[in-house]
Length: 239
Image: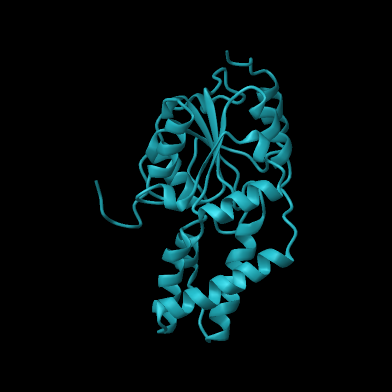
């Protein structure tokens, strides 16, 4: 295999999602959170860029793309290295601003998010897997009114390696009692897509941020996609 970064990635394995709508139905479903269920990822990226601008710095497009969806500690270290500042100081300042922003901003679900989670939860177990800290993730799920539909939550503290490693999606599948290959994942970022595919889940990508091009056997513009909704409506409840 070539180590040339310009080399094309390997082809995706055949998937039941290659046909749309699929004849297949999943045993369980795992959703990402930020950028998929709620538009917090865009606000978090904007906050990073504003912080960098105050230090007369900016990420180049390749770095920005690679950091989207990564755990906060990874982003903070990258910012600290770029501006030559202690990462603990960056963490204090940036995470304080993030908490203030969260308190001031109403949690608004992405188009189709609430309806899709509710519809799926009526016939399949649902998990949310996010690089967010546990407290942040629980807050978002509660604020979106989704807590009653979510069987399991997997946060950054719950795994040894966060996304893009496969640990988070593998853990979510275990918590739902399903084989990863029988699970469906929804992701918006390249980081999250790599995690889901690495764990062996079937994946639908729903990119929401400019510059993100997640690899997936199926991509849709939003969770309001009419074919997606018609497909879900045909799923039979599991015993």
